[in-house]
Length: 134
Image (cartoon, rainbow, N blue to C red):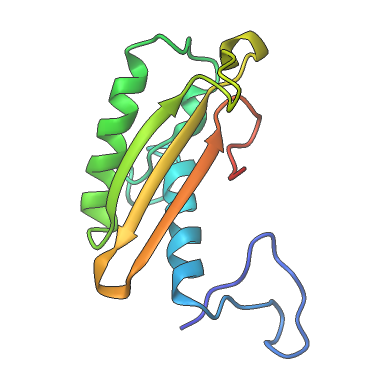
């Protein structure tokens, strides 16, 4: 069963919406949805979701970010147990400058699916209105 590409795109070949056809893209999209969904937002399953948007205005030295790593681990083990996930908060740019000077904090997530030889890295900007992959 295919799921639509987001943002939605019209497709004459697939029907109303263009479908994702690669398994690795489906996994990535589902993981992004899990990251962006806030607990309590999904009807019938109030525990589902990591809620990275809730960290939008957190101080980068806050202990809340430690909870973020644990929340990612807990949610992935419950809803996407086939993923092996590791995350880290990025506070410096590639030149060694503090990102806090630019009011920015980034979350880097490494995930893998051993049985499918999928190894991916996502970097999210936690200071934008909508958390999305960079």
